[in-house]
Image (cartoon, rainbow, N blue to C red; front, side):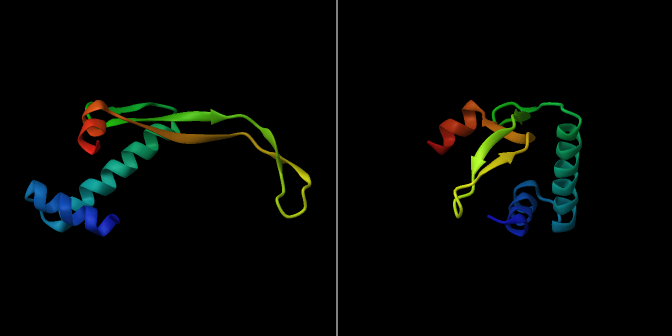
Length: 90
């Protein structure tokens, strides 16, 4: 499912216009991005939670040449599915 399909599904499920569903989705993505950027955790009961995980710097290997390279430390976004979502999918 891509963004346009998600907007269509949200509009149909909530009885909204596609424009309002797009605004709602854009608002959710913007608020989630801002909260994660500040290092906050987002928890949606039954659905799951988003948080930031710190990945340490490490050595890697260039697969083409075999040379050792340094991979920088970075933050990654992690999603953990909630129990309702997990049980519905399984």
